[in-house]
Length: 166
Image (tube, rainbow, N blue to C red; front, side, top):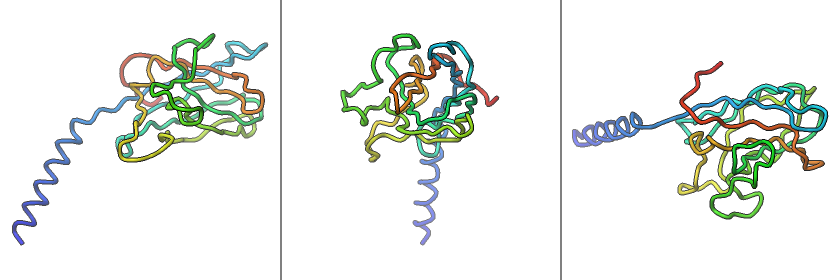
């Protein structure tokens, strides 16, 4: 039975060493309206943070002044709100399966989009590519109407270091 204790100790050391090397990132994405008549109107921020437990990005929405409706959240190729290019798709996947297809539907309630949402890959398996905040940096995050397919708001995922909660 002593060997069982030694095995447990070895695994504890291995897990501790691996977790101590883990890197996480965090950034606030300030969202502004881009639709006609409202360009530049701030809606609030989305806090993107790597979940150390799930190794997935988590998005914490705190947006207000959002027109009633259903929206999708997309990550685009470039860091531009005017002409951001295509949805981020480094693997050439079909729409709905692209890494940049973050959330297919969010519904505003009383003008608010709030809540915490974990972003998982379209097909979640052990070897699926999992989006990180570091990978999101340098791209535009778009809030697009599911009804009209028009962009309502955009924010740039800034380059830089970890941002503390605000």
